[in-house]
Length: 234
Image (tube, rainbow, N blue to C red; front, top):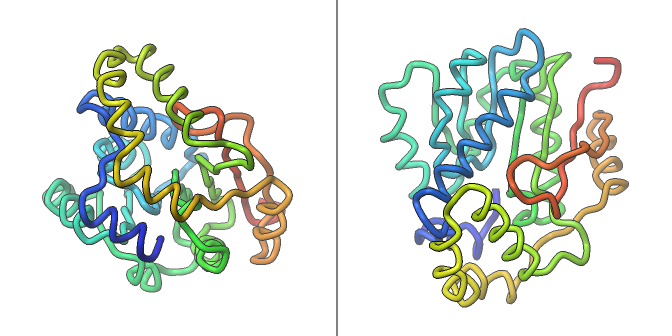
């Protein structure tokens, strides 16, 4: 997970959603996408950097167990409260990943996270995922920012998503605020990490995984892309 300043921003309560419906539809799409990704017989899912993970219970019902690994203390506290009584959803910080047995996770998903990681942090995450993946497990890294994508492209994709999922008015009203928000200022100041397919293939291979670009990204933004990796011969 990202270090300061991005982690500080999440802890302060940076919000990238223009309305409650936007937030609901985003996490609904993520849960549905993760369920569709489950390998046959999958029993354990790791969602790395899950945000509020509103529908993690649905993913757990389809798999057996979901582990939510969140670095931001404020978000992790909300997750603990939301899923305190859920027997199949657990919440940990990144340090807790070392306690998970090797080969014990059937699906690792991280969405809209790697753009906030340094290259060294990305490599460390890939090494952790490779250790945790079961022999037939899969790693999916989605919402990777390709070179050339700018803030206005994200705004346009948000408006398209809002029109399709019926929160366009709130999106338009909020758009001016989003463009001058603390998140937007941080993004202009520090930028986002960008990766192409060949670099992701190379980084995955360095930890013993084979991977390729997926046909579609998870979530609503198809200007970004997703990468899937597995153990060889799985």
